[in-house]
Length: 622
Image 1 (cartoon, one colour):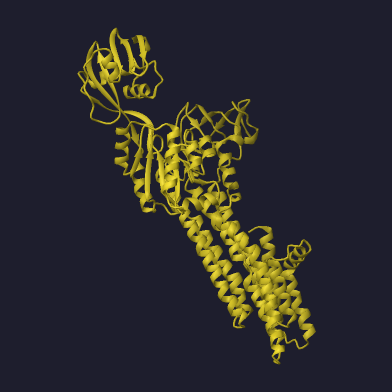
Image 2 (image 1 turned 135 degrees about the vertical axis):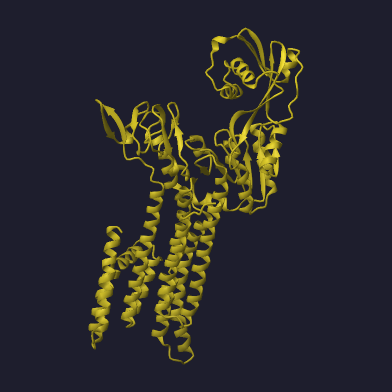
């Protein structure tokens, strides 16, 4: 509880005690009673009166402060001293609760996103000196000890460790990091001492971009928030004029009919009407629901750039995936050796050495599968044939490694492979020696992610890829994706997304999921762009509307479920708050509801709506 809240609590206690004392005292003089009750009223409500007066002077009359001031002053003027002071007291109790609840949700989000480092360690004269991360320049060597946060993005120069990335990804599974690996700010160094060379200044590092994204997310309003803002702008003046009409028209009509006007009764009804009409529950709980939803998503490793995107995400019915790097790891690995005329290890050795001068991913995968240091002195007469493969001498023996075109080129009969993937045919000393199958491996949770999306109400899943048709079809079949387009250029992907956008219903939204780097045009064209594998990727954070801070496709379904929970809470609060107010307004106009009912319709409804809104902060695991 901050100083302002503590001060308000003291005012509430003092005012409540004075009310109890005055209620017990036998006061017979009306003027004395008015003067004594006005003391606790000023103690608890002076700030509301000041705000109402400032609103009138600034020509911004119609707000909750004006409603409360008119209603309570009017009640006291009618001789209902106790009710007038009590309404102001309970209103301030509600305001205190609201302030505490909003502050708590902000603190919870701050704790969930507590990834900003307080300092960076720089070695000077053999000693570690703590400096502000903002002062560290690119290329500086910093020291990160076990238990400390990595303050700035960089590359490990010395040391190895296990990193806790839970603050970024929402997952507790640690990651290993070795010398030469890139590391990003916000991770916690769990085990070893690290020397890191910084590659960015702090304001450009991952942790700064994430914090800036979350802090600015409230500036992008959803349609629901915009509706409530417009609603409050017209609603408050409307109920004020209605209250005036309620106070004046019935008594005038009664006078014309020759009946007693009963001005006091109708003015009391009008004042009750004003208290009931206060729109606090809606004005506070709806933005708070979205704020809490964005915070809950952040805790799960899902960064949403604004409540408008959270609302769009909740309406997602079509999900379109890029294949490589999204549903597959994007890392080629040797999946098998077939028809080998020699020992598999020896064939891999020949392939790795023959390809050792190439930087192509296929070459890298062969070298990785070989698993031993490459001695390039054993390799000579390397001839790389574009679109075919490579021919080289390894230990003086001619080795050809490439596709079927290369085998035809050198006149070697080869065996077709029935498995799907990239095939590297091998010829050693002029004779066919077998082929190596290289394929892109599915991500561990890719298949489960499609199942969860369908459970979440997604009606159509589509995969786009530049791969060959047989490869794409096999991946889609394994994953259970309903529709697949293969052999695409980047421009083709945009055209297909345009086509799908035209097919879907007007209330259905299409999400595109890509790696955020080469898929930027498609991410921006879709109703909602989701970047996968974005841990530390600047391009992903810039291009997408929603950023998943790790490469787990299962998070897509979680993001949709979080958004739908948030929107459900928003609609619950809208229906509940407006419904209760309409009922109580009617009761107030008919003279059935008194000020105590009005207090519930205002403060009680607000408290319930705020408590409901905070539920969006908490996310269940899938």
